[in-house]
Image (cartoon, rainbow, N blue to C red):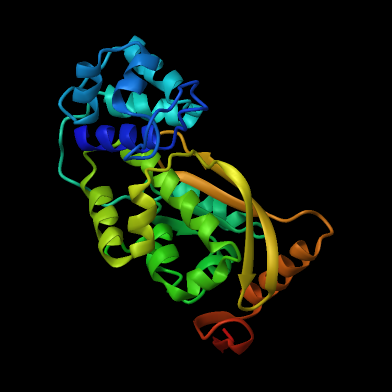
Length: 300
């Protein structure tokens, strides 16, 4: 957690332009952004104390210091909350053996009943705990539909986004989607610094994906609870869907994600076509991409 706080402060200090902060710059700057002494002066804290914070040598900063730093660094609301999580970590729960997570039966029943809406249930690490038939066909038709029920090999949306070529081809704005995924994962890492599964996921992606490693090092932070996704699906082509992330009560960070199209739009027609496929055939796997897609199907 100390290194995370230090990394966050350094990246945010580096992005501030001296003139934007009302500081007159003299001479050649060896590093981008503000100098430590300049930020300390803006925040009204001593240089020694700020240096200890940025070097990870001090924890549990006071609320007034955190707020002063947030103002001086011009943080967004999400970044301000993240700074609080890093600088004043919440008391953790007593350690207990890790147990596999599953979506509650009632939640699985709910999304199964949502036949016209793609839906997924994720854990806080973006592991897929459940999906309905349309959600499976939309995002991972090349995966076993029963995979979310197997903790050992269940899909993880962030891992798929960076390491699975089929998923990469699904997103028309892959770079934007990747940045959003990393920013969301950073928020979770700040709230749950002692989650070994999350640490393992981040470590795996840093090693296997240079793009993830580069984005992670920039320490983006943003809560992404709603928005739009521009997709190119191998069966139904281009479509744009609105998504909503709903946090489920009584579950440790589980979220229900739903995707919808504007009524009467071509996107709705594309979902309707995919829904027909879901009801009439079972898609075993995809090979190729775009117009060169080869799909293996079996009529039930």
